[in-house]
Image (cartoon, rainbow, N blue to C red; front, side, top):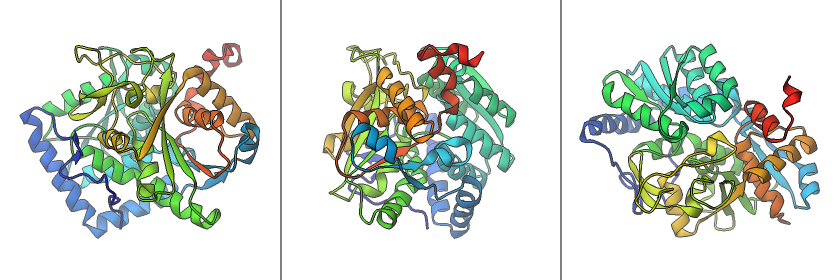
Length: 401
């Protein structure tokens, strides 16, 4: 039975302490109520659960393994570093876990048109993949800037039959893609299902995405006990909107001996507009239908963001992360573009594993803060999608000629 993990931070009607909620127009409320009822019914239905378990095993490729990155650990002077290999899941990232769960939910609710947003492209690819498998129509909104730096993923989505709609407003990144997806959903609620990719948005989305991504830590916790003989000393994951981090932390929240660390995008520096470190430099506000930490100026206007990683380039964060920060259960830190790029090369050349630039931020923090104990890090995606960005940032464009 796949259930939402119980923890001190479990949502009560969409609230994580003061965070979360449903800050949406009245016209959205019937759809959110329908979604919550559909989700509750699905999670109580053994047939739905059985089909989800079957697809996670035979389609996604779960469980993903733990791998001890011994040469990387020796290189940085640390104790054992174990990687949870979400890069080995079908489509190359953790996003497929949630896409399969919500795709099945949409099908169960009779919704044939799926709307999604994407930044790094991995959620868009995962959604397009699931829609192809389930014979559902797929529309993906993506910021124009992200489309340029993730051109390979754009082509993958189109190969899978998805309609990719460029977003030219605002920063032309993930924030604006989410806004456009919400606008579409408001006008097509009867026939469409909005498949959000992270633990953001109005209730019940943070709970839904957390539930489907918690499989990461549920597996990792059991695998650590089996492979290592005990729990890790610390669990580390990168944080953008927060889906892979929430999935990585969920099963460890009640383990007081395990330190939890979320690594955000420090970008070019601490100045507003130069980073996407929402929990480090933001303050509480409303974004995309929920109350959480937000990057905003003194007038409350949502700030521009910057990160070398398209998947972390978002001015908000899931409300449960905001709650966990305030409680002190999770420590949130940030890493800059240059450090993340260096970590990309370190893991690639020491282990033959090419990480996405998102988890490269977590790897960079581990490299800068070696620990004698056991570190478990979620490698949330593979780096194929970032080849052009890495080549450009490192001055190796000629390698792609």
